[in-house]
Length: 578
Image 1 (cartoon, helix red, strand yellow):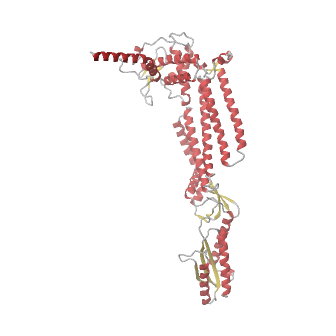
Image 2: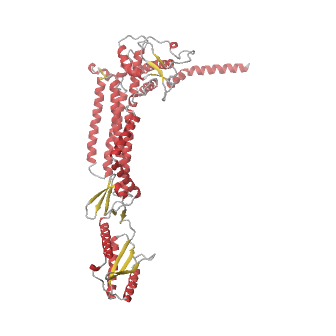
Image 3: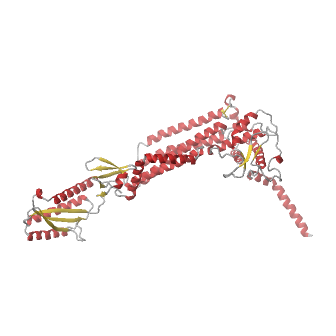
């Protein structure tokens, strides 16, 4: 029999534990259990029970305002909004519209006779086939089964019913209450409620003239929200003046940094003001939805502004590092990347913000796509130049400051933009070349060579003895071989008698001077030319007059002169590129 006694004692202990903790279990289930939308009956019962709980929370909150009790009210509103079909309501307004709809429903249902749960589809175990929709008796308010979407197969109060609730409420608000409730009008309690920072004694001293309701919001709340907005505007204007003063001095990074603080300050002010207005002033109805749409639109515009500046600020911060020259091709590439990133980011933010305030994102993207296609056709050359600029950045045929030859022109590259490149010609004029044209041209970069070419042709008299000519060639080769700056490999340097022209003999001298510094090359060239003329004079060899030099020789002289001119220009206009 001992095991019977042990079993009895254990059962009693278990019953006592369950009995003692039953209120705790009930409270936990009440706080965490989700609303049931599996049938019209469950949806209706969840609605009635939720409204009763909401009134209980309001009563407790009015007796002792606290942030914890306010959070509980918000949580209960959030649970009840799951009973509503708010898919057609802009995301920015779903909280306000849902909360107002719930207070309207509370005041409407309390003026209707109680509905027997067994008469609602799904209220009886025998109900097998549930209808697609059910109408609350005595009203046009419908509970319908959702087809598709995240709430598919749930029974929710329809969007059309939600849109008509305000009109239904105004029709019945003066009718007598037929069911026991804590408030004759939960909607009025809701629109007059304030946050913990606004004590009851302050709202009780508001003049009756300011308690008049406009757009479902008391007039005094509208005035208070206007004062908050004005205070935010004053702070923003003062900060804008400070940033304007600070941007006038310092580097580009400093200027962009101070410029970035303005939208950042606006976002901070928005966060503080939005928290105070929603949590403590609590606007409702049409005024709240309008204010919410306007503030949300302003928020995303300011965020887009901040992101736009941030893209350029990041690029300029990188450019300002010691590794990158401020006017290099890498710097221009970073600025181009920042511009593209800014345009893309701002576009995405504005599209997302438009979707939040009720402008469908897919429709907006489709419209932008059609408009973008039309714009692309109209701005075909601009887009072509943009991609031409990208090709120049990728291929890097030159850097900023390099002297290049393009087409029949030569000059120093000063800037590569999104549409065109700017090149300073040798005569000082500024040439603007479309990127698409420049990307297709043959580009000769004189600044990127690793050595300089020494090339000259001697025109000797045709009666020069062969022995002296041979002696001249040997002495010239010895002269070049003795110069340490002259490259000596692969048959270089070259000294050759190239032929007999009309009235003279041609001796061509070619050598590479191992330096990319043109000033040093000129020193070496000058020394070699002086030694060559001293050698010619010592061998008593005569040169012909320049006027009888052949056409081929003239072309070579002109080419050498042109290259010397370019080299000289390179030396005087060179810029540290990377």
